[in-house]
Length: 387
Image (cartoon, rainbow, N blue to C red; front, side, top):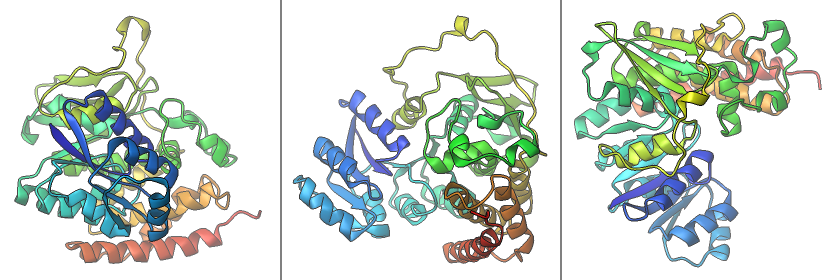
């Protein structure tokens, strides 16, 4: 029996993870759950799974939970709740499925406690890749990727050393605006950008997919997960989203991982690793695919991908700036205050204004993050639409 803690249980990844747990109730047990403020759904999850420890974003949310749910459990609010859930002594695997950077401290605390980390959150490694991976090495803790692309690469590598790798090839659906010109993108509104052609995800990650920033963040994440430099990480547009990613080895062989587009597969892989379990999903029918297309990304229309490569090449805190400015710009776009094409402008101008400093400690990282958020927020306000 593997005992699981889920940070972000009410989000799309968290709900898929609970589906995996319930499909393998003889092998998986939920010990801890943490979420934001969706108390109604969280109460249903707690009542059904009876975890030993729960966390919610605010004390008020915890009070509401108490009125809805009579299941006894340790209840903790805020950042301390994330840490309490992630470090509970009965937990074996911590799934980080939160969005943003709130769970960074909880992930580091879980590593120090010797927990296996199943990582579905890009921002943790984008912000603090060196700190997190060094802590995992020191504590001999596994970081298992849950993002479908990195999970695919993990399967393709199958423990091969970095020296065997010529390049990693991350696939991207291209989002809802694949093939559109910069001029057409200037007219995009949030409702358009939230219609992803393949995946059903939260609003922030869906916008990141539309700008290709999601793929840029994945390039940075892949660097830290697999020890491969940026020049050996490529991105290709693959509209069918059947090939989840590929690895080219030094002898020219290319190994690909294919599967149906369902996040329960990579989640189950992380929970079951190193074993393989049967999945309650339909198999991939190769005879019905028809064709598999691959194209180069359009860096002119989608500059966020280029900015991510620049951040990884320069490092010295620039990935933190990239991530923070992107979160601010995306939030402003979703609120209807910023043009779609201005997202990249906010990010690039914030990166240009940054004066590199050390990013060796969590305090350093949080300081850079705070500066970038304040700068990009002011910049976004100057670029606001006339509404």
